[in-house]
Image (tube, rainbow, N blue to C red):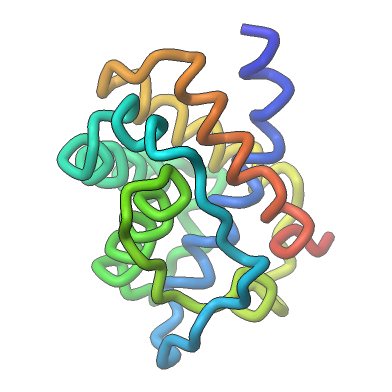
Length: 157
């Protein structure tokens, strides 16, 4: 539980920014090499592979779109695209062999004025989705640790 608390603010910021950025309908650019890191493929397996990642992202999106703290950040967003890019991103980050084709996090989140509170709400929504899909806390923390560095490129206020 302590580990979840440590990563909560970091992961929330990353995901909120990622979603808001991918919600824009700007043509995707190749991500910078430093934008997306790749984990040991055992994380992909421990997450349950692509079918479970897809379910987690579907539940995550449902959570965010109904969360009064952050749902407004998705107004006018291409929700289908956000969902697809999150699946790509989580698959690549976890070592699943997918390629993230979305825009760099810093570029996508420019001007969105996202706060740590937005980021924290996003992380909470992700954790709820992972819990719902039976992902162990240790595995969640491994994924969150990979997402956390994106906070600096997404939170601007």
